[in-house]
Length: 160
Ligand code: ADP
Image (cartoon, rainbow, N blue to C red; front, side):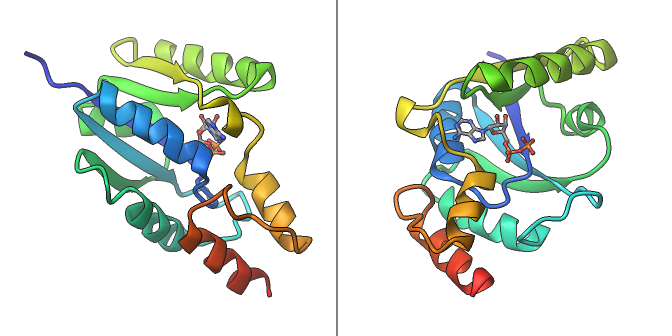
């Protein structure tokens, strides 16, 4: 039987429990899941790529079929190089849909052999984003329950 490799790309600045919810669902559906951190020099991230990778590696340790990697440039090029059949993306609300649809259709045009699969997180995470977590942390709010404990600690250090 064919083994399915999926790529879950994103900024993960930082990883949240919403991302982890999606990763867990992905581990059950695909044989291997590569969480690919985008190295985007234009964005102004809070955490460096290596910090984001370290947090992801720690948080995904329970799942042996998850690998964490870094990529830059075109996602479909990276997926082709990895011989992935699937790109995994999360849809939280209607507001995600338009942008995600545009990206998925463009990626299909660039590489018809790769399928984008959308998954929904548990409802409790449908309002959760890395951007919101950073904003709450900056304003001194509690991020416990929104991100793994190790990430909450790093956020505190980074922002203080
Ligand atoms: P990007 O900069 O590519 O949007 P993110 O790290 O913000 O990177 O998100 C990566 C992927 O994870 C996207 O598909 C996004 O929709 C999804 N995602 C982010 N937060 C959640 C969440 N709380 N629940 C489900 N999916 C999520």
